[in-house]
Length: 139
Image (cartoon, rainbow, N blue to C red):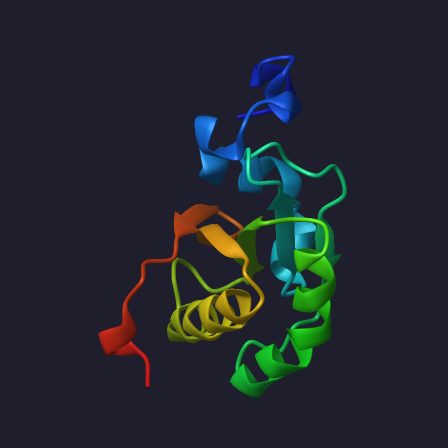
C-alpha cells in the first residue's frame, strides 16, 4: 500500500475504519524497522488520529523493564488522547517473544492511565504483523 492508495479523508476517519497494519506500514519506514523503532499513534475516543505520532528508535527490546520508564509519557499521552496504536520495529522476522512481552507490559501501563490500545504490531523489513495477546507465552 502507498499513501496514494489511502482515501483522501483517511486522517479524518476513525483508525478502526482503516486496515491498521496498512497504517503502520505507511508510517513506519524501513529505517524505523531496522533501527528498532517504536511507534505510538494516538487518537481521541472517536478514533480520529492525532496528527503527530511518537517515533522512537534504538529501542532495546530485551529490556522489558524500560516500559516502566514510559510511565510519564503515558500520563502525558492520556491528557490528550484515549486510544493508542503501537508498533515495534526490528530486523527479526515476524512476531518475537520480546514483542509479546512488551505488549503485555504496555497494556498494563496504558490501563493504569486510562488509555485503550487499539492494536499492537511488529514491523520487520518484509511486512507488518499483528502482535497477539498471548499472556500464556509471556511471564
